[in-house]
Length: 492
Image (cartoon, rainbow, N blue to C red; front, side, top):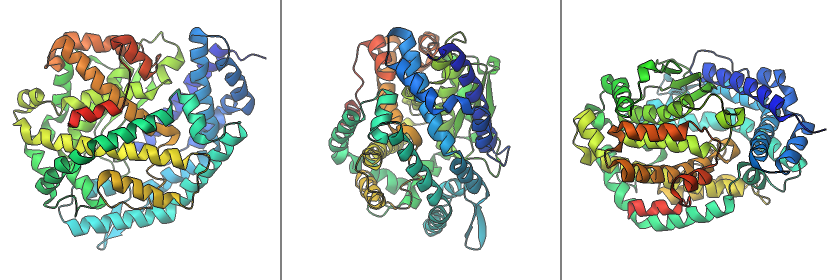
């Protein structure tokens, strides 16, 4: 019997809203328990094996919007099928992260607070002790859970008939991961020579040590760049974002559907996030306070997500408001984040001399592009047909070390992996953001971010949610092909 797509989609919306609300309450530090098992249990019918098979049939039949909707719902159903099976591990990981305390020099440091502690610690030797304690806790308490979830996901994908997790996700996400892997190799080769030239002087300026001596424990402090705090005054944080949106013709104060949370809480995740609980009616924008430039970048990034979701046409199908290709929403997040690196914005909004900030931002950007490029290559091996879990920690360390020039650790070989090949969404989003930026400059000038007409153009894109995948959307708007390797030219 054919599946009633509309009825199924309505149930999907209820589940996603409940799951995102649970995520938000826990990771914002407002709720201790992370009760995802209960959410999956209340909506178990969405993820039955028979439902997955019927959606697979629908996604392979016919054409047009019905086929597109079915493909997005199939992707959701498989994600949920795996998520339900791994919900116990997911809840246990979240619970342990929230309750774990490290002991460093006789003082307690919350496990989730370790990245913030590293960012704000001036003493390099103490940074290393914090990092060592965090890695030890990860290896003892969390890696066994990560390993169990990985193995179960691989097993379930095989039972559904795919040769490997990588091939399943490539089909479901509509992304040629092998082709993308080739593009990131070209990018890594094309930026190899420039990388050390750009990052070494910035490391010396921030940390007093160069690339040869910097370690993992130092990178949070490097991103933090405390010398820039005089420019990135926390008192200006919210006002600067509100004013930037106003320049684009967006009245943040009047957007009652965007709920901003910048309150510090002991168990609040150190990672900023946007939780689209009801799209477009209830969007939570959560930013932990690390300090300085990072807070501005995080707020503008997650603000990009929030504005995208908040401006979606409420009449769109559920699949296009909540599901689809997350490369699209990430591209808008990176686009608004990039405003905080723009020379004109730095002068006008913060009354700052842009040169040192721009130099630091470019080095950080290239670091992340190269690290994520290496992460994709690693995950293609980790989730491939012939993956050997015994050798993957060493392989992870090798690939990330080579790409970043920083001696990496093996223990984060699973903790550093986002589910569902989300690394590919980030990589494609960076490439798409660069094309949006170029299009905005062509249409509205170098100071596009001060033009309400540019905001109107963006709202036109946002209104369509994620109906189109990233490559389709770019081709429709500009006629260009989406390629990650093209980013190498930005660093020439």
